[in-house]
Image (cartoon, rainbow, N blue to C red):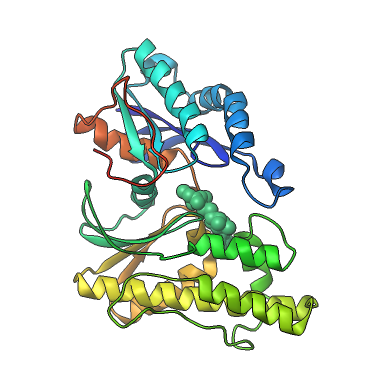
Length: 334
Ligand code: KG4
Ligand code: ZN
């Protein structure tokens, strides 16, 4: 089955063609980051307008790059939520028109389930059940993934998402938006032990997260020590990153142990950070647990993961009707 995926939930217009939910024939991501960068974050109205301008071109590029014709497409999948409502509407409406004009089945995909499916597009996939950590700009969620359609939420952030904390610290250091990759790069030159930033574990049993205290500690440090020079900035980045990753690794291992899972997966934009992969890889290995990651280019928002999740929904006959709408906050897909 050849599925066309469309994902425009935030500041990237993405389209992809995936066969049988496993093989990525093409994955195009058109980023708006240059536009939003000067505002220090995503401006929703601008994002919607740019999706409208880009969506048709990006979809056709994905089809061309896959080396197929439109007639070969068997189904369409588009992100239904959560995300920016105006942005979602652009892709969802485009997908509806594309599917209905060709009488194709269409799936409305939960963006978070899409991120989990990105792990199934790697060279090696975890076996069910596994624990999945989704770390992105909007979410820090821990799941017990029991099967292809069963995602039990074990924990989530009570304030900032991990990626959001990276973006905010980057802003404090005058490094702009988005901050993840910049902080990772800067942290390479810093000493993670030179500043002992707080780790919030929220009690022994909790699988929830909190990063607002850490964010405030970084702000306080900058306030007390003044605008940092290059070396001090690198130490702040390294210390902050180590604090985030210590908490993420500890909770992933605890979740896997509590659910007797031998496999864990990490997905979402922050999963592209190699220091995170190293930290979780080390800690899981020590406990006899194996870590799985999506291909690096599928960590951030992309449409291949949406097509992969959509493939399963279409097989299960879980289809979108014309009167179905998008949603901005998370809820179950069905
Ligand atoms: O999954 P994603 O592309 O979009 C959402 O669904 O939110 O994640 C974007 C987030 C941003 O906050 C960005 O700063 C973060 O992922 N990110 C990173 C890295 N690359 C992207 N965080 C840490 N290290 C990175 N290398
Ligand atoms: Zn995402």
